[in-house]
Structures are given as C-alpha cells and as structure tokens.
Length: 382
Image (tube, rainbow, N blue to C red; front, side, top):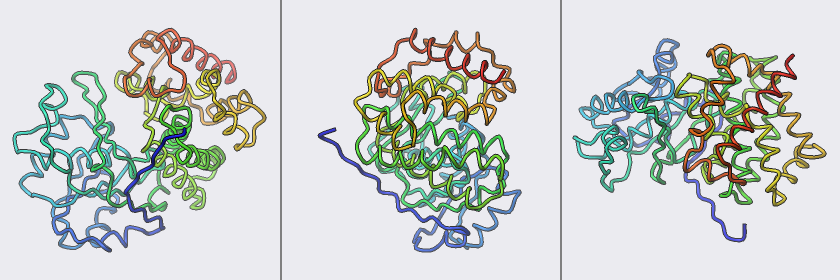
C-alpha cells in the first residue's frame, strides 16, 4: 500500500429530521424525486414536497427492488419531457441507484437508452451526469456516497454497474428516523449488506489505509448494533449507529468496490430473488478463513481491532451473528436449496468483483466456500 489515493466528493449531512432541511442550500429549480410507491403512501414524499416547494417538478414513485434497465428506460422517457436539473433519490439502494442511472441517461441524446448501451454496446457520449442528492432510508447499501449504480437486466439475467466520478452524489442527507419503521427482514438484509461491504473492502486488492480504517470502524459498530436492532427495532440510537456504520462502509467501497462475496451473490439474487444482503453475507465466515491464507497482516489487524484473538475466532463470531439473524430462513423463503446454489459456482466469478479479492478463487474454490458456509450454518442451527 505504498501508493494509494482517496477521493469522495459527497457532502454529508447526518441529522434526525433531516428532511426538513432538504431544500437548504440547493439552488436547483427543476428537481425530480425518484422513490418507491411506499414513501408516497406513508407521507414521506409530502414531507419533501413541503421542504422543496415549487422546485420539485415531478415525483417518480415507481422504483421496484433491484431496478431493471427496461423500467429505468421507461422512467427516463417520462423525465425527458420535464428536463430536470437535479435528481433526488429517496429510499433504499434501488432508489438511489435508479436516480444515478437516470442522471447518466438524461444528459445523453434523446434516442439513447440504458438497454441499448448495456445490451448492444451503444456508447454513451462524454457528457457529465445530472447532479444527484441521496436520502437513504435503509442502513446497508452505502449508495448515498458511492459513484456506482447497480442495475439489473432480468431479461438477459445479468447485473451491471454504471460508474464515474460524476455519479458521486453531490449531497447525502442521512436521517436515521427514516429507518425506524423498517421491517425486521429489511433491517437484517440491509444491515448484513453493510457488514459485507466493510469486510469486502478490507480483503480487497484496492484497499488503502483510509478505506481499511473506515471499514474497521464500520464493523466495530455494526457487528454489535445489528443484533441489538433485532431486539429493539425502534431504538433511535441503534438506528443512528447502524446508519453510521453503513455510511462508513459505503465510503470504503467507494474506493475499493466489492469482491468475492458479492460476486457469489449475484446469480442468487437474479435467479431466485434472494435478498442482496443475505446473498452476499452468508459466505463471510468462510471467506475470512479463505482470505487468511493470503493475509498480508490486514486481516490479523482487523481481528485484533475488533477484539478477537485470531481470525478463526472472528469467523465463528460472524457465523454466530448469521445464526442469530436466521439467515437460513431467507433461503427457505426463496425455496433455495444447497444443490441449486452449488450448481451456480462457475457463474459466480464476476469480473470486476471476484478479481478484487485478496486471494484469487476458481470455480472449485467457490464450490468449497459455499458448501462450507451452508454446512456450518446448518450444523450450528441444528
């Protein structure tokens, strides 16, 4: 790590009741709000409408989980007639990623589509994306501070990532009160996503001292806070802590991207609808042990910083956390069995993710990692 750099241009405001300040310091006059139907029904959109006044030109509340590129193209066509000068993404990672993808498309020629770019390889012109303001309502994705937009092509069964420094949100408003009403399943899956981000940014070839420091602090908070949230979901202090942990992990992966755990996860979400945070966290204990074989000291230092004697002890603690949160129950809900998962091992080496891993893996390695992860969870559960 003799040569490294760190850059993150997002201005962060962390405060309860932050929506009241959403219009402060914003000079944009034609703002498009990108969100889900639920936030309209629960009155959160009305709160933003009051804060923004006549600067809010349109509300697009059609975002669905794991945003599909065809749906994003439909929204882009609708927004072109409004000509927004700024986008606000309100919601979980799907809303924030959709806002970023739209920010990229809307500065392109009218005939440009996301599907044409990703399926046919049609190039984007070198135009800067529209500015994006992010308002996360989950504590997990960290998308509020990353220059990435994850989008899905369910027709082609592929996952894509748009990226660029112009996709760094200009501002992130973090209001932990927005997470108080999250259901338990979403609290757990998003929290495990944040934990996965932190671990993945440490055992990453692109890691640097700053990203490792951010990830370590994130894990110091999240590994203790997430099980507490399961017991006391309406505790604002714990909600604030988990949102802080997610932010720190997001800042870490904004530099490193993710690695093998996320690479393994994509076919499980695409093919079976397994929640992303579950799909990328169930292998964490085995990946800790796997990457320990190539450790240059960073995993040992992480282990000590988190208060564990060795990496195996930390792996056991993470496995206990997964058991406590009943991760296997999510697999059962999706009717996903071990033999189905193991058959996908050679689809789980995604370029740009698996090759970030500290220790390179083969399809056979992935098979062993998954089998070990599921067996350990099953044996300990029984």
